[in-house]
Amino acid sequence: MTFILKMAWRDSRASRRRLLLFSLSIVLGVAALVAIGSFRDNLRRAVADQSKGLLGADLAVTAREPIPEAVRARLAALGGEEAREVSFSSMIVLPSRGGQTRIVQVRAVEGGFPFYGQAVTTPAGAFAQLRQTGGGAVLENTLLAQFGLRVGDPVRIGEATFSIAGALEKIPGESPAVAMFAPRVYLPMAALASTKLIQPGSLVRYRNWYRLPAGADPEALVRELRERFSAQRLGYDTVEHRKRDLGRLLESVHAFLGIVGFIALFLGAIGVASSVHVYVRQKVGTIAMLRCLGATAWRSFAIYLVQGLGLGVVGAVLGAAFGLGVQWALPA
Image (cartoon, rainbow, N blue to C red; front, side, top):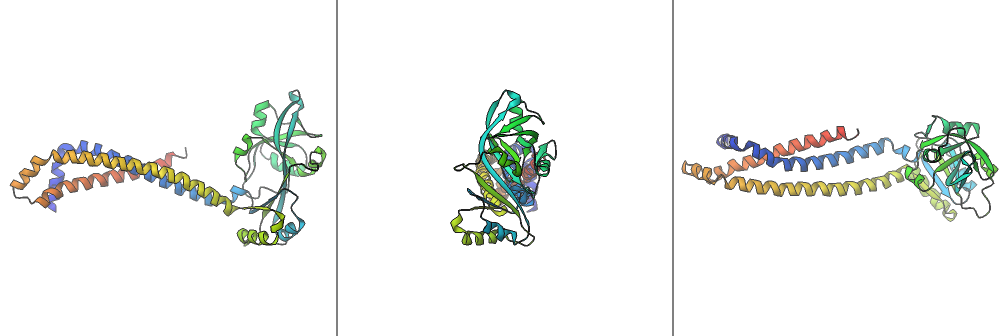
């Protein structure tokens, strides 16, 4: 073995740059697989660490009619907190912009939602002030940018006029993508009646958010509610449900990227195999000389097998290091 290792090292002297070039295919393929795997694991950890911020509560109950009192009483008996939201689509009128109109999603809120995470607004604290003062409106930041609105400008929703309390950047429980169809406008629940927009036949969605006491199992609670109130046509959402949905999306993305990385590695392997084949054919004269000097066929083969294994090991190590290094640059 000592002879084989020494001969493999000596024989590679004239071709080390070329061998290193061959290994670049392995480096890039392994780096792609390591980077994709690390990215998936980092995302899973991030989702687990910030899971409750995905929903903003432990449990959400939705319906097309006000949540039945029996359901609210059952959840209130657990102890915890409740917040309510009534949402519907409507037109907003901008008196300061010549009466221009825009279709929006009106959200009337009451309670301490979000229970986990926070609503990011400009100026900071505008969402909390909305709940405390019971006046004003928080508009989607894209809405302010579109019409050049400012904090303090009046907006009319239905028959009520509100002043803009702030611009909404993001809020737990929803993807910003929902605002692409209609920007969100948040009002205090106490001011909803003054708009006179909810009439018989109005398409309204009711949602109650709950922060459950420590030790409560949201999944078991949802199963119980589904059985007891099956006729109510209620919708339920939990943190675990959000994590599963997001997990399926991440798995799909990872599977696609994994296939891309595997194809890159496979094509790199074909390229390396072809290069090594050409390289070994060029060494036929050297092998013949070794056989004439008494080297066995196995030893002659082992010399170039060691070179090939060394090529793979160096490429895999460099690729793994490069793939891990990508994780440091990726967040930036």
